[in-house]
Image (cartoon, rainbow, N blue to C red; front, side):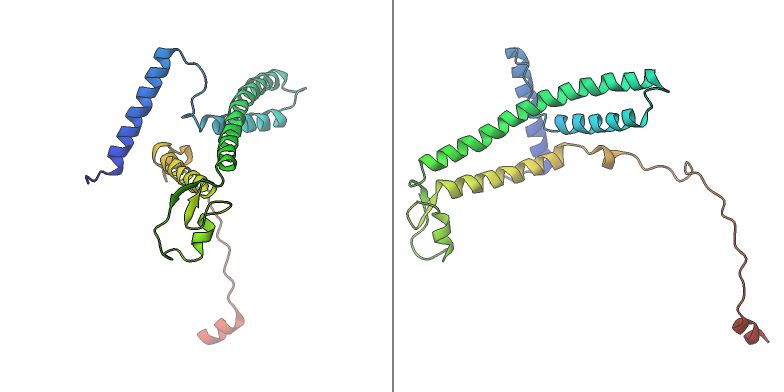
Amino acid sequence: MDEFNYKELKEAMLKTIRDINQWSQEAGIQEPSLMNFCKLNAAKKELFDTRQQMNATSAQDEFSKWAKLRRKVDKLTGEVDEQSMFQGLMFILNMAIPWMLSSYYSTTPMFYLPPGDWFGPLGYLFSFPKAPVGAVSTTVWTMVCGRVLTLVGDYCREVFVSDPVLDAPAPAAAEKAKVPVAEAPVAESPIAEKRKE
């Protein structure tokens, strides 16, 4: 078995994403992509920040600035609502389909475990809720697959998505403003004066 490092995996995944984007453009698909999982969070953060600025601005004193912020809030609210609806649909599909499959095939084992008591009392848990003892049920298999996919997704986000907070350059020491601090006079205690004598 050939080994590969994370850079090769990253390049392969980026190439796959580029290919999928190209095929989507050629097919004329305009719907939001599932690969844009950070877009909604960024839009929500920008919406929150803009609302904070708008709330801090007086509508009477600085009407033009407030109106500009209000238009931006309205635009971002529309974008977030549109993306949230798509994300809600995906959540329903990701929850409903596995539940229906697990319910329909609840007595059918995915596969049988090796004979013997290898897993001890866990063998009964693997067959939960209705599969025969000594087999892995569809419910357990669905939960395990979902957990593995979640871990892989988290890993991919960590590797491929840059965090603007972590990527920001640290401020140079020369740029920091130095505030002069006055030194307070040090009072000597009577005990210290006696020791000097």
